[in-house]
Image (spheres, rainbow, N blue to C red):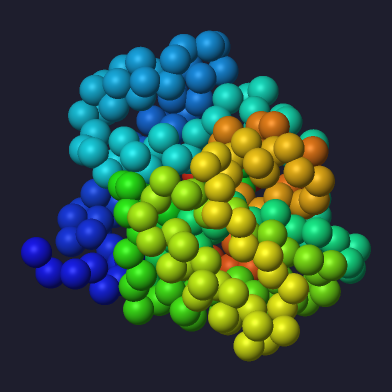
Length: 242
């Protein structure tokens, strides 16, 4: 098996997410959100909607990444900080969540803009992180866009159970030292729990985290909106569907 070099599009993506399929998928997102809002379990709701629309695996993953209940949407809107952030804040980065999304962005992979306006990838991570050609450019992209806010400090959280986390932590530290960015890299057993229990502005698109934090910044979305003419950003946001 050849080593993965990019997090770009799957060969089937042009067919799975063409304009005709997007009409179907937007209806599926509406139905799935309706079921979430009424308390259906995510697994059961996804099977009901996926089977009804006869969706393929990557299409099911896409709508799953796009949806949230109305209650979650309200919570996230209230806790989201806008683009006019104060300087000198502490940022808490959900490491793999954000890094893989930006790697996908830079390699032309499919991205989802969910109901909540968050950008999410559908690349997936299965117990092991493999560096790709876009890894260093993605780290640089994150650092340069974040440095605009002159953060007091930036804490990156990586999952200890995922292989190569230590190796990635060394790379992050090396790049941050090169640019004199004030980054601290934390390799921990449960990053989600650590993030929601620390003080700072969270950078993540993870639904579980976003429903539990006091302040979060929609970092990726706000930094790529001027480039949203790219066909591989599939927009399911509430604003788009008004």
